[in-house]
Image (cartoon, rainbow over all chains, first blue to last red):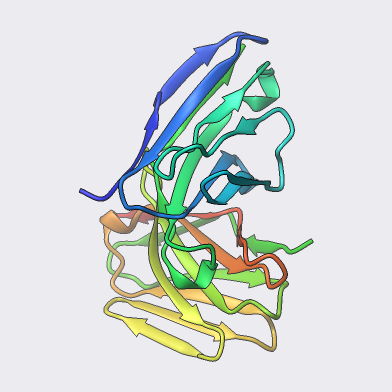
Length: 115
Length: 111
């Protein structure tokens, strides 16, 4: 089954404790992206990657890191989480870099709470 | 920067038509999208329209595009309780080709 898998789905952590949210897709997509969803703000892009070893900042990259060492994986790293990073996070992927050339497939989301 | 705006909430009765509206700012958007987010799930593409089209119909869904006013709407005919979800409008940023999402409209369908 074609899918984007995120882990963990739910996480409660404390300020300053490094964490990683993993994302994996099995569709051989070149493009992958991370979003956060907050009430009243819609989806905001954190980072995206057009292909292996190519990553770029989105609209809200502060406090986050990513890596793209393999095509299927795109982990999101919070080196020192803070309470304002409490949010619902989505990983998404699509074929090629052109937005109009393919549907964006989303994972089921990871709800993160930072105390 | 580019902006996509939607009303936050819409309530309809089962069997009625729902109309969800969206305004966008980037006149160079090639495609405009509607995504659906069911409770506890990620977003799924519902439909999209190419910018040179005025209307697209797909079963119970009708998308209308008014490029002059930069207004996009999604009409759901014979709305069912299973249509209850958050609906996101999205445009492509002409400069970066990124997807810009609206804030989402929560559609509540009353039985």
